[in-house]
Image 1: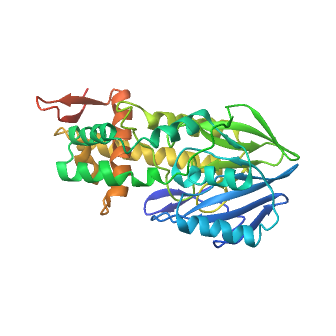
Image 2: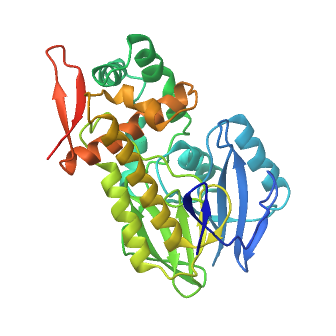
Image 3: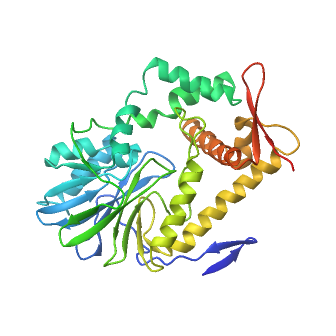
Length: 353
Protein backbone atom coordinates (compact mmCIF):
# COMPACT_ATOMS: atom_id res chain seq x y z
CA UNK A 1 0.00 0.00 0.00
CA UNK A 2 1.31 3.45 -0.93
CA UNK A 3 0.28 7.04 -0.53
CA UNK A 4 1.18 10.09 -2.58
CA UNK A 5 3.56 12.52 -0.91
CA UNK A 6 4.83 15.58 -2.77
CA UNK A 7 4.25 13.95 -6.13
CA UNK A 8 6.08 10.76 -5.12
CA UNK A 9 4.67 7.48 -3.90
CA UNK A 10 5.58 6.86 -0.26
CA UNK A 11 5.15 3.43 1.26
CA UNK A 12 2.78 3.15 4.22
CA UNK A 13 4.42 0.85 6.76
CA UNK A 14 2.78 -0.65 9.83
CA UNK A 15 4.43 0.02 13.19
CA UNK A 16 3.31 -2.47 15.87
CA UNK A 17 5.44 -0.63 18.44
CA UNK A 18 5.15 3.12 17.79
CA UNK A 19 7.09 3.92 20.94
CA UNK A 20 10.73 2.92 21.26
CA UNK A 21 12.52 2.26 24.58
CA UNK A 22 14.48 5.06 26.19
CA UNK A 23 18.17 4.52 26.90
CA UNK A 24 18.53 2.18 29.85
CA UNK A 25 15.07 0.66 29.33
CA UNK A 26 13.88 -2.63 27.81
CA UNK A 27 10.84 -3.27 25.60
CA UNK A 28 9.31 -6.71 24.96
CA UNK A 29 8.72 -7.47 21.28
CA UNK A 30 7.45 -11.00 21.79
CA UNK A 31 7.86 -13.65 24.44
CA UNK A 32 11.61 -14.16 24.62
CA UNK A 33 12.44 -11.20 22.32
CA UNK A 34 13.55 -7.92 23.95
CA UNK A 35 14.73 -4.61 22.51
CA UNK A 36 16.75 -1.69 23.86
CA UNK A 37 18.68 1.22 22.35
CA UNK A 38 22.26 2.38 22.83
CA UNK A 39 23.21 6.04 22.11
CA UNK A 40 25.44 7.15 19.23
CA UNK A 41 27.28 10.50 19.08
CA UNK A 42 25.98 11.30 15.59
CA UNK A 43 22.97 12.67 13.77
CA UNK A 44 21.55 9.13 13.79
CA UNK A 45 21.75 9.03 17.55
CA UNK A 46 21.01 5.42 18.47
CA UNK A 47 21.40 1.77 17.50
CA UNK A 48 18.86 -0.93 18.30
CA UNK A 49 19.98 -3.89 20.39
CA UNK A 50 17.95 -7.11 20.62
CA UNK A 51 17.93 -10.03 23.07
CA UNK A 52 16.72 -13.54 22.20
CA UNK A 53 16.04 -16.04 24.97
CA UNK A 54 18.52 -18.91 24.73
CA UNK A 55 18.74 -22.26 26.51
CA UNK A 56 21.36 -20.94 28.93
CA UNK A 57 20.63 -17.22 29.01
CA UNK A 58 20.08 -14.61 26.31
CA UNK A 59 21.74 -14.03 22.95
CA UNK A 60 22.37 -10.35 22.23
CA UNK A 61 22.21 -8.99 18.67
CA UNK A 62 24.63 -6.07 18.13
CA UNK A 63 26.38 -4.02 20.78
CA UNK A 64 26.74 -0.28 20.08
CA UNK A 65 29.79 1.90 19.59
CA UNK A 66 32.71 2.23 22.01
CA UNK A 67 32.04 5.47 23.85
CA UNK A 68 31.84 6.25 27.56
CA UNK A 69 28.15 7.10 27.15
CA UNK A 70 27.35 3.77 25.47
CA UNK A 71 29.21 1.79 28.14
CA UNK A 72 27.40 3.77 30.83
CA UNK A 73 24.01 2.83 29.35
CA UNK A 74 25.05 -0.84 29.21
CA UNK A 75 26.08 -0.71 32.87
CA UNK A 76 22.76 0.93 33.67
CA UNK A 77 20.97 -1.94 31.93
CA UNK A 78 23.00 -4.60 33.76
CA UNK A 79 22.27 -2.90 37.08
CA UNK A 80 18.56 -2.52 36.25
CA UNK A 81 16.31 -4.42 33.81
CA UNK A 82 19.05 -6.90 32.83
CA UNK A 83 20.18 -7.57 36.38
CA UNK A 84 21.03 -11.23 36.81
CA UNK A 85 20.71 -11.92 33.08
CA UNK A 86 23.28 -14.26 31.54
CA UNK A 87 24.50 -13.34 28.05
CA UNK A 88 25.01 -16.66 26.25
CA UNK A 89 26.35 -15.32 22.96
CA UNK A 90 27.11 -12.02 21.24
CA UNK A 91 25.85 -11.85 17.64
CA UNK A 92 27.19 -9.02 15.49
CA UNK A 93 25.41 -8.26 12.22
CA UNK A 94 28.18 -6.28 10.51
CA UNK A 95 31.50 -4.48 10.86
CA UNK A 96 30.32 -0.89 11.36
CA UNK A 97 31.42 0.41 14.78
CA UNK A 98 27.88 1.25 15.91
CA UNK A 99 27.18 -2.50 15.73
CA UNK A 100 30.53 -4.17 16.51
CA UNK A 101 32.15 -1.44 18.62
CA UNK A 102 31.47 -2.99 22.02
CA UNK A 103 31.48 -6.64 20.97
CA UNK A 104 34.92 -7.31 22.44
CA UNK A 105 34.02 -5.49 25.65
CA UNK A 106 30.72 -7.38 25.98
CA UNK A 107 32.26 -10.78 25.19
CA UNK A 108 34.89 -10.24 27.86
CA UNK A 109 32.48 -8.82 30.43
CA UNK A 110 29.98 -11.64 29.99
CA UNK A 111 32.41 -14.46 29.09
CA UNK A 112 30.37 -15.05 25.93
CA UNK A 113 31.42 -16.18 22.42
CA UNK A 114 31.27 -13.90 19.37
CA UNK A 115 29.17 -14.95 16.37
CA UNK A 116 29.45 -13.00 13.13
CA UNK A 117 30.33 -13.29 9.45
CA UNK A 118 33.88 -13.82 8.26
CA UNK A 119 33.79 -10.47 6.43
CA UNK A 120 32.69 -8.64 9.57
CA UNK A 121 35.39 -10.15 11.75
CA UNK A 122 38.26 -9.75 9.29
CA UNK A 123 37.01 -6.40 7.99
CA UNK A 124 36.92 -4.97 11.49
CA UNK A 125 40.52 -6.09 12.05
CA UNK A 126 41.52 -4.39 8.78
CA UNK A 127 39.76 -1.16 9.73
CA UNK A 128 41.73 -1.12 12.99
CA UNK A 129 44.83 -0.49 10.85
CA UNK A 130 43.34 2.77 9.60
CA UNK A 131 45.81 4.94 11.53
CA UNK A 132 48.73 3.75 9.42
CA UNK A 133 50.30 6.56 7.42
CA UNK A 134 50.28 4.56 4.17
CA UNK A 135 46.52 3.96 4.37
CA UNK A 136 45.81 7.57 5.27
CA UNK A 137 47.85 8.68 2.25
CA UNK A 138 46.03 6.21 0.02
CA UNK A 139 42.66 7.55 1.18
CA UNK A 140 43.83 11.14 0.62
CA UNK A 141 44.92 10.32 -2.94
CA UNK A 142 41.63 8.48 -3.53
CA UNK A 143 39.60 11.57 -2.63
CA UNK A 144 41.90 13.93 -4.54
CA UNK A 145 41.76 12.04 -7.84
CA UNK A 146 37.97 12.28 -7.69
CA UNK A 147 37.98 16.07 -7.46
CA UNK A 148 38.23 16.98 -3.78
CA UNK A 149 40.45 19.89 -2.82
CA UNK A 150 43.58 19.17 -0.79
CA UNK A 151 41.98 20.77 2.26
CA UNK A 152 38.74 18.78 2.17
CA UNK A 153 40.49 15.52 1.21
CA UNK A 154 42.86 15.93 4.16
CA UNK A 155 40.01 16.50 6.59
CA UNK A 156 37.93 13.58 5.31
CA UNK A 157 40.89 11.17 5.09
CA UNK A 158 41.96 11.88 8.67
CA UNK A 159 38.83 12.95 10.53
CA UNK A 160 35.95 11.63 8.45
CA UNK A 161 36.59 8.02 9.43
CA UNK A 162 37.51 8.71 13.04
CA UNK A 163 34.48 6.72 14.11
CA UNK A 164 36.03 3.59 12.57
CA UNK A 165 38.44 3.46 15.48
CA UNK A 166 35.66 3.33 18.07
CA UNK A 167 35.88 -0.45 18.31
CA UNK A 168 37.04 -2.40 21.35
CA UNK A 169 39.58 -5.15 20.69
CA UNK A 170 37.79 -8.22 19.37
CA UNK A 171 38.16 -11.70 20.88
CA UNK A 172 40.84 -13.83 19.18
CA UNK A 173 38.23 -16.34 17.98
CA UNK A 174 34.68 -16.25 16.64
CA UNK A 175 31.95 -18.55 15.30
CA UNK A 176 31.24 -17.88 11.64
CA UNK A 177 27.67 -17.21 10.47
CA UNK A 178 27.20 -18.11 6.80
CA UNK A 179 24.42 -17.63 4.24
CA UNK A 180 21.69 -20.33 4.52
CA UNK A 181 23.04 -21.78 7.77
CA UNK A 182 20.56 -22.57 10.55
CA UNK A 183 21.17 -21.13 14.01
CA UNK A 184 19.37 -22.50 17.05
CA UNK A 185 18.73 -19.94 19.80
CA UNK A 186 16.64 -21.41 22.58
CA UNK A 187 13.44 -22.84 21.08
CA UNK A 188 13.75 -20.76 17.90
CA UNK A 189 15.46 -21.67 14.65
CA UNK A 190 16.87 -18.85 12.53
CA UNK A 191 18.06 -19.08 8.95
CA UNK A 192 21.06 -16.90 8.21
CA UNK A 193 20.74 -14.45 5.35
CA UNK A 194 23.61 -12.20 4.35
CA UNK A 195 23.27 -8.98 2.38
CA UNK A 196 25.87 -6.76 0.75
CA UNK A 197 26.07 -3.12 -0.25
CA UNK A 198 25.74 -1.42 3.13
CA UNK A 199 28.40 -3.72 4.58
CA UNK A 200 30.02 -6.87 3.24
CA UNK A 201 28.24 -10.07 4.28
CA UNK A 202 25.87 -8.31 6.68
CA UNK A 203 24.10 -10.92 8.78
CA UNK A 204 20.31 -11.10 9.07
CA UNK A 205 18.39 -13.65 11.16
CA UNK A 206 15.06 -14.97 9.88
CA UNK A 207 12.68 -17.09 11.93
CA UNK A 208 10.22 -18.50 9.38
CA UNK A 209 7.88 -20.02 11.97
CA UNK A 210 7.24 -16.65 13.64
CA UNK A 211 7.82 -14.42 10.56
CA UNK A 212 10.57 -12.50 12.37
CA UNK A 213 13.47 -10.83 10.57
CA UNK A 214 16.40 -9.23 12.37
CA UNK A 215 17.33 -7.06 9.39
CA UNK A 216 20.29 -5.09 10.78
CA UNK A 217 20.80 -2.02 8.54
CA UNK A 218 19.81 -3.64 5.25
CA UNK A 219 16.27 -2.20 5.41
CA UNK A 220 15.26 0.73 7.63
CA UNK A 221 12.17 2.89 7.83
CA UNK A 222 12.37 6.41 6.35
CA UNK A 223 16.11 6.46 5.77
CA UNK A 224 18.23 4.64 3.23
CA UNK A 225 21.25 2.80 4.66
CA UNK A 226 24.54 4.16 3.42
CA UNK A 227 25.91 2.31 0.39
CA UNK A 228 29.55 3.27 -0.13
CA UNK A 229 32.56 2.50 -2.26
CA UNK A 230 35.47 1.34 -0.11
CA UNK A 231 38.75 3.15 -1.02
CA UNK A 232 40.47 -0.24 -1.11
CA UNK A 233 38.06 -1.33 -3.87
CA UNK A 234 37.65 1.91 -5.87
CA UNK A 235 35.87 0.26 -8.81
CA UNK A 236 33.55 -1.86 -6.69
CA UNK A 237 29.80 -2.00 -7.25
CA UNK A 238 28.24 -1.98 -3.76
CA UNK A 239 24.99 -0.47 -5.06
CA UNK A 240 24.57 -3.38 -7.45
CA UNK A 241 25.17 -5.79 -4.56
CA UNK A 242 22.67 -3.90 -2.41
CA UNK A 243 19.92 -3.90 -5.03
CA UNK A 244 20.35 -7.65 -5.56
CA UNK A 245 20.05 -8.16 -1.80
CA UNK A 246 16.79 -6.21 -1.75
CA UNK A 247 15.35 -8.32 -4.56
CA UNK A 248 16.37 -11.51 -2.75
CA UNK A 249 14.55 -10.38 0.38
CA UNK A 250 11.44 -9.46 -1.61
CA UNK A 251 11.32 -12.91 -3.17
CA UNK A 252 12.07 -14.91 -0.01
CA UNK A 253 10.18 -13.06 2.74
CA UNK A 254 6.39 -12.97 3.34
CA UNK A 255 4.48 -9.70 3.17
CA UNK A 256 3.67 -9.70 6.87
CA UNK A 257 7.16 -10.41 8.24
CA UNK A 258 8.01 -8.30 11.30
CA UNK A 259 11.21 -6.40 10.53
CA UNK A 260 13.46 -5.66 13.49
CA UNK A 261 15.95 -3.12 12.10
CA UNK A 262 19.24 -1.79 13.40
CA UNK A 263 17.86 1.74 13.76
CA UNK A 264 14.46 3.33 14.29
CA UNK A 265 11.21 1.40 14.69
CA UNK A 266 10.26 -2.22 13.98
CA UNK A 267 7.82 -2.39 11.08
CA UNK A 268 5.73 -4.56 8.76
CA UNK A 269 5.92 -3.89 5.02
CA UNK A 270 9.27 -5.32 3.95
CA UNK A 271 8.47 -5.90 0.28
CA UNK A 272 7.05 -2.41 -0.20
CA UNK A 273 10.00 -0.82 1.58
CA UNK A 274 12.51 -2.79 -0.55
CA UNK A 275 10.77 -1.59 -3.71
CA UNK A 276 10.79 1.99 -2.41
CA UNK A 277 14.51 1.82 -1.65
CA UNK A 278 15.26 0.48 -5.13
CA UNK A 279 13.26 3.32 -6.69
CA UNK A 280 15.11 5.84 -4.50
CA UNK A 281 18.51 4.69 -5.76
CA UNK A 282 17.34 4.66 -9.38
CA UNK A 283 16.23 8.29 -8.98
CA UNK A 284 19.70 9.19 -7.74
CA UNK A 285 21.25 7.42 -10.72
CA UNK A 286 18.97 9.49 -12.96
CA UNK A 287 20.24 12.71 -11.34
CA UNK A 288 23.86 11.77 -11.99
CA UNK A 289 23.18 10.69 -15.55
CA UNK A 290 21.36 13.96 -16.30
CA UNK A 291 24.09 16.11 -14.70
CA UNK A 292 26.87 14.39 -16.67
CA UNK A 293 25.04 14.61 -19.98
CA UNK A 294 26.47 17.96 -21.12
CA UNK A 295 29.72 18.35 -19.14
CA UNK A 296 31.92 15.67 -17.51
CA UNK A 297 31.75 15.83 -13.72
CA UNK A 298 34.02 14.58 -10.93
CA UNK A 299 32.57 12.53 -8.08
CA UNK A 300 33.24 15.44 -5.71
CA UNK A 301 31.27 17.80 -7.97
CA UNK A 302 28.36 15.36 -7.98
CA UNK A 303 28.11 15.12 -4.17
CA UNK A 304 25.98 18.30 -3.82
CA UNK A 305 23.72 17.01 -6.60
CA UNK A 306 22.68 14.13 -4.32
CA UNK A 307 23.28 15.76 -0.92
CA UNK A 308 22.08 19.35 -0.77
CA UNK A 309 22.56 20.01 2.95
CA UNK A 310 25.79 21.17 4.55
CA UNK A 311 28.01 18.21 5.51
CA UNK A 312 30.62 17.83 8.23
CA UNK A 313 33.70 15.63 7.71
CA UNK A 314 31.95 12.52 9.03
CA UNK A 315 28.96 13.05 6.76
CA UNK A 316 31.10 14.07 3.78
CA UNK A 317 33.01 10.78 3.81
CA UNK A 318 29.72 8.87 3.58
CA UNK A 319 28.18 11.24 1.04
CA UNK A 320 31.21 11.10 -1.26
CA UNK A 321 31.57 7.32 -1.21
CA UNK A 322 27.81 6.84 -1.67
CA UNK A 323 27.87 9.21 -4.66
CA UNK A 324 30.68 7.14 -6.12
CA UNK A 325 28.65 3.97 -5.54
CA UNK A 326 25.93 5.35 -7.81
CA UNK A 327 28.52 6.40 -10.38
CA UNK A 328 30.13 2.96 -10.37
CA UNK A 329 26.71 1.33 -10.86
CA UNK A 330 26.15 3.51 -13.93
CA UNK A 331 29.62 2.72 -15.26
CA UNK A 332 28.96 -1.01 -14.73
CA UNK A 333 25.70 -0.67 -16.68
CA UNK A 334 27.45 1.18 -19.50
CA UNK A 335 25.42 4.35 -19.01
CA UNK A 336 28.31 6.55 -17.85
CA UNK A 337 31.96 6.41 -18.88
CA UNK A 338 35.05 7.29 -16.86
CA UNK A 339 37.56 9.83 -18.17
CA UNK A 340 41.06 10.44 -16.75
CA UNK A 341 43.07 13.56 -17.65
CA UNK A 342 46.85 14.03 -17.74
CA UNK A 343 46.93 15.00 -14.02
CA UNK A 344 45.01 11.89 -13.01
CA UNK A 345 41.70 13.68 -12.31
CA UNK A 346 38.78 11.32 -12.87
CA UNK A 347 35.53 12.63 -14.31
CA UNK A 348 32.41 10.99 -15.71
CA UNK A 349 30.36 11.56 -18.85
CA UNK A 350 26.98 10.16 -19.80
CA UNK A 351 27.10 7.75 -22.70
CA UNK A 352 24.75 8.87 -25.46
CA UNK A 353 23.22 6.55 -28.03
